[in-house]
Length: 500
Image (cartoon, rainbow, N blue to C red; front, side, top):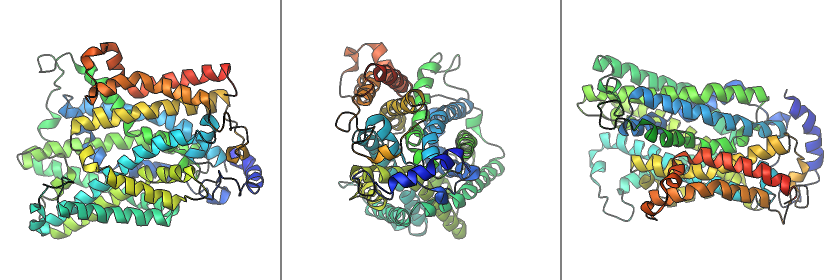
């Protein structure tokens, strides 16, 4: 058993028995005890295999290849980005495993008991966007496969307020309802779902890879096409200008989970389980599943005479009804498991943190679902270029600085020592100034500020020609710049104003 848990569990239970009446406490946000620690190394590896083996990962390399990379450059960029992001993920997971606390409660140590709502809400609204995207992907998979059996479904009009057909929206809502039903059943249902999905999706991906290789007599032209950045090619000499924003986007893909990983690591047996499980599970699965996407897509060019990046579109080309139904169920389970674990657990806790006595984990999950619909996710993923350079990079500019503050506070300032009881007290050690840590908020703003001009120019809210090029280019490194600046600013400001 984890030594941190053994040391802390008696004190936590004793202190929390006196804190049930605190406005900062509810059963969902309370530290977990030894009896709830059921996640070992394989559970964390399965968590990342399950979350990484999904349709967005399958299609991730397409944006990089579309931008000019060859397949090996694209897969290498994906692997490197995930190798980088797993490091802050393991570090932030440490507090969850040691103290059994979820992400928003962990934020109280650095941002204050009230100020913790700032990073929690920033993380929550990003998760709502991702929840909507994954729900749209799952619902659209159901729609496309149903349209094979009922062709009239494909003829609906998109000339309406939503911009999608009624059948598409109905399938979206159906898949949304399944997501809500799972979250209502709780965290153990999620763990079981992830353990089912992990081997299922790896097997499905490898089968698809085998089919593509056999049918095409190889993997086709995409794996042999040169990089557009090579000498004599259309974008010769421009590789690094594309690589760094692409790498930032790859880091941004899981920057969300690098913050709220305590929501899962609080259930770990030991620190070794969470650290090795994540290190083994995340970078390798992301690279493998992205390669499957590239290889199968390359083969479709030979098999069908057109390049098909969406695996759902590939599957709809099959005519065997049994195969189509099995594929639809597998894709739904895959998307469901990823969506619940990655995009509902955290915002459910984050919204509960706003008013712990009034909002439960289940209610927070329902709020997430409603906001996910309102964001009209089909519009977020309509443009592959905007997907990387607006969506992924933009929110990494927010989440990088939050990670910098949290890691600086926990490892540099506090040396991993927290008073768990004070995390649940409005008048405890983490009250700071009226519940807000001015130092953390200042460091957060300083970390976000350098990327703001580049973001505004990217979304055409300002004229980029009037902004120095060097300042605009910082946006391409948003997560890295934000993390480093917020980390350094927090450490420096905490020394100058230890109580602020």
